[in-house]
Length: 632
Image 1 (spheres, rainbow, N blue to C red):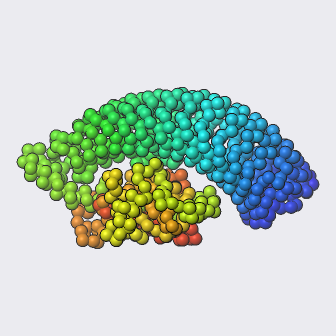
Image 2 (image 1 turned 45 degrees about the vertical axis):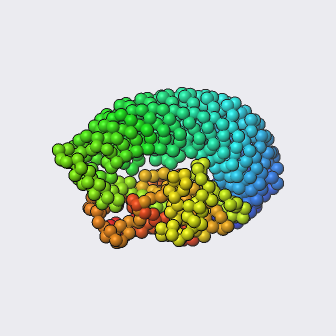
Image 3 (image 1 turned 180 degrees about the horizontal axis):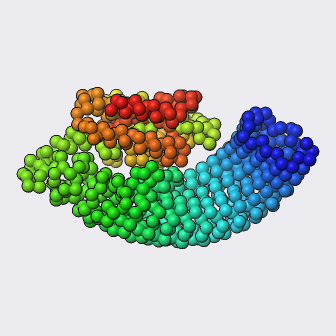
């Protein structure tokens, strides 16, 4: 086919090496072999196709380095896509001589070099994607020459250094900037205000410090913003009120705004009321103080994709009254203001959590409420079950209150904790690299080795000491060996000891799961071939123990059981649809659901072989959920 100019064979079952017949079509300008099973190296003779403008080899099994190809001979190349293969070694510096190049994609490979500075010569580049490799070093200053860039993706590498203000200032055409899951440090440069076209800005899971620059408010078309999992401090700038198109602050594409677990301080800005497109506002576990601004009541479209309207301001330092304006959020069904310092309430919602505050006085609006959502408030009285009557003897009311708390609150929290059991679907990133990384860690671990989602406040030796070197007296059962560790720091954690060899990137994915119905994985470590998973301690046994243990289901009335079923469904839906990588639980049974005062750890490794050798699908979860439904 000597006169062939356009050849598209994508999405077939080709499973050979690079088809040699193609190399005789010297007039080819367009070649697409993507989404096949082609193997082996890219042949050096591909440079015979000097007229090639578009070369797409994405999603195959091509292997080896790319350095043997004389890339500058393909001088006409405008579009080069080599993503999702098994290429290794260096990114060829010779790419920098492809002056016509507009698109360069090398994502999801195993490159382990630095980013070649020669790429700064490719001034026509509009899209550059090196995500999900093992690249090291920093962003070369020469990349500032790429002033036509529209999308830049360098996430999930090992890149370090600061995000240079000179780079940011020259990338004014960017629509999407993704630098998350690296080790960038320093501040978020104020020059970020120059990115006036930016719609997606992801810097999460780095080591960025300092405050959020108020200049972020100049990004008027921004819809997705994620600065989480850094070391940011200070207040949330009021200029966020200018981001009227803002939909999420979170990687998970579920219209979530997630600023929790940073160290933000100061007061909630009234400017949030201008963010009319917000659907889910989550600012839990910070140091936010002051009163709740009434302007939040204007967020009439507050809802997430599944239809569950949710506002979470829990575990901060908010004070004053719970304003009735929040109740004006159209359709708002779920509100969490627990663990603050609030002293008054004028909100009547179907589902709200005001526990652990300083509320007092009559609460007629809580007539249908469960005790667990109003526990640990000093002076509440009213018609709700378990509350003292406002006209009755206070001592008697307190006694009744305590009895009700012991029976209901201890049996099932409003926040049902569902455990992730294995089944992280095989991600786009190759597990071979992660297995090698794990092998290295296991072979080189030290007596103090510990890998944390965030900076740990204690060491592995502290856990050993707290459990008396994992003595049986600290074993609390569950899948594998689960130990309760009460640390000298005041932390109480549950530690699962397993013989297991899960790839690190899958485990790290679990540390990013954030849902109010899922037990949080705080961190993990490896010691002498063993894996230790450190979970948030939940002071109750499994649902199975509550239903069929000594308690025999005592206190689990019909309303509570419905809440459990609903909570499990919400958690499974989150794992299936709202995580950055779909997670299949596939063991949502009555023994894998945690209650409120005990611990049942997930069988993360128990079913690892099943998860990676069988086609476990969402249907498995649906089946198990139906079984759980019947059991409850």
